[in-house]
Image: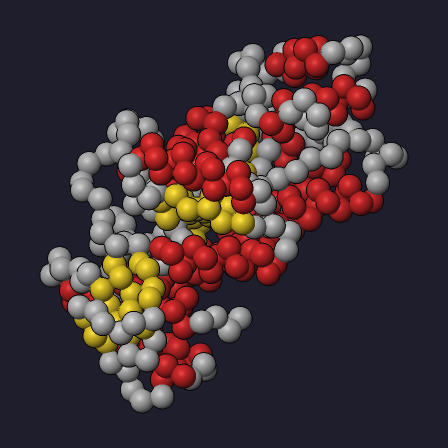
Length: 382
């Protein structure tokens, strides 16, 4: 992919400025005025060969690392022929929330993207990441809902902690534009939460091919596309840090489902896509760990209070009632009670349950390729 040079250099600068705990946000502008000027050999900014790009990145890394070792981070960096990169200030030291939460410190100051982030699990995940001190891009097909949610998050925080990005995860150009928007705004990606998902319930003998393809395109192909575009940005950051001996790990986390751990009656399109997602997680984990990118899945139980289940027109309670999936059920209350009784802890999964698992996945550096159940004991793995 022939990315603009600033989209290559921004994550490189972030990685080069990694101090062992976090990397700063970086914002690009076309002007050349900056505190630190980095000169390049003639012709290099216009060259697009792998060798020339490596030379440019090495020049930037070697200019910045001595400053990090001295504890002096410049306010801005200009690369000749490219433009300037403003280094956005870090927050003052201190915890953003309860320090007892596992992995909370590992999330602080990180840049995260949450797809399907405007509602349901996605919104709960975004709130949890912001509470832990992360900066979060709310990426959603419904850009108006995403913008309203971002305004709420920023208002409550008293600063800009979130941005809204429109995305259709089943469309590669849309996914590419999402990644570029975040890199232009903040310089890179540390945590990518692939949460966007859809569900069409129905018998295998009745479900249309159109509905089957729709579920597969969003839940399975969408995860592939997001990983394809996020991983190169993460690799640039991690390589820049590694060039000077720092271990900088980043995370791709798929929000999977308990239906990715066990089959789901009259829900084959969804369950099949989620099973496939775990196969992608394991395969991507084996490949991307070379770039210090961890890939894990979190498999939540049923989020009964979210719109996926509770929407009065299209929610699963309504779909399952109409599909006859629960024998003898004559009301939504009957369907909900049926599913609650399946959980040893007698309740559905909450957003806080999933956020805690994300904290763990990020903090645990010796874990990749895993499917982590968060099901209240409904699915037990061995």
